[in-house]
Image 1: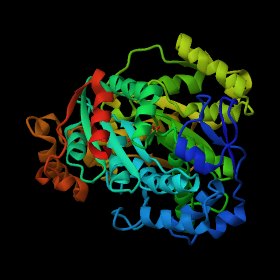
Image 2: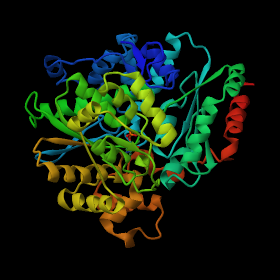
Image 3: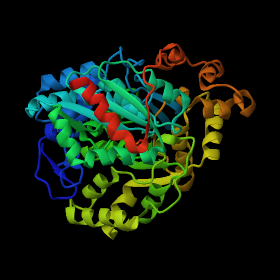
Image 4: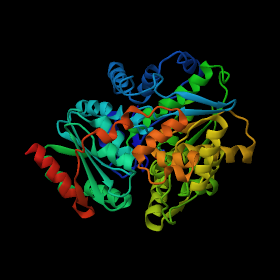
Length: 502
Ligand SMILES: *Cc1c(COP(=O)(O)O)cnc(C)c1O
């Protein structure tokens, strides 16, 4: 399997090169050159497989330049009982006869990004070896909270790599900040930036685009790379859990062989739901993919109208990992649906750059509209949904998952569709416990308490155990105190790397 660029102007590359470089040289994103069908017999034969074995089968389809043994090693060291607190890795919880929750937060940082970022470093170091790379790979990451910690946990102490994470000083939750500043590992650096997430992301992009700085780093034998969800090595592992959820439902007799299901995905950068699209393309029986947005509802408007318009106020919400106006991975979906027409993609992306908007052609819009459905939930609806589901079924959903549940209810009401539905749950409720505690226990219980105190409050109210990764956060030493100006991020990278390699 080779990879081509969505902008149509770069040569095809192997999966190892796609994973090592992250982005295509023409500014596009790497996508597989063809679909990788999994026929029904093959799907059936995976029913009794463990999560690891299912992952090996799916990943081998896409990473054909990796040996079976290599994939097996990667999968086994990423998805095991030391790193995940559920033996099923991504367990499916039944809410009622037709509604299920796919819990993607049993990994070391309690958010779904662990499913990809536990295995990406392993795929990346092997990619470096395969392509004769002898430089140190420096992962540079801007984070609004979840990606940074998941990347730190994935890359810590991985030989041949260094990881540097920048986060907005006042733009992450108390727990997210504590998770990052207490990060251990010989190859990690974490710095707060005086600014908001857009400043941090702009700063990182500028560093990537600075060719002179790249040459300077090369003298230290270092090359920059990204752990962002534009990297194919993050998307491919996410396809696995859609297959796995389907196989679990089938094994439990909840669905008949071949029966279609819906997936609801709380969406930000469009990476998670795009993986569901790839699963559908491979032959997983899917009826509808439901894209759940928060008040930053660019995607909901796009899926309804075919017009992408980022020209609106950015809103800070209680589901911060979905606060995004430009969803990078949508470009991949458009490429697949417009018959792989790189010229069209270049035109639409130029429109987005120059005018803040574009409209896709009728045919592409028709395809989107048939497979996808979308709506959004504001903060009030999100809190109400957490409360309702807790009262109704005792299930405690985090704010992002609650956006998914709310949009599913809107979908069911609007369409009457009785298809069995799986909602992707993207974070542990403990990770966003202030909002969750407020929703189920009321404002007064929350008032004046720190997020760490609220962990215990939420645990008592829900009967759920506090995840080990969050439990001892206040006892861990703070190892990273650096605060940098938004214009000095490059200096921070330089001083960290020269300190190490000079
Ligand atoms: C990253 C994230 C999302 C959004 O996922 P995308 O792949 O960017 O669409 C949703 N929920 C949580 C908790 C996240 O961390």
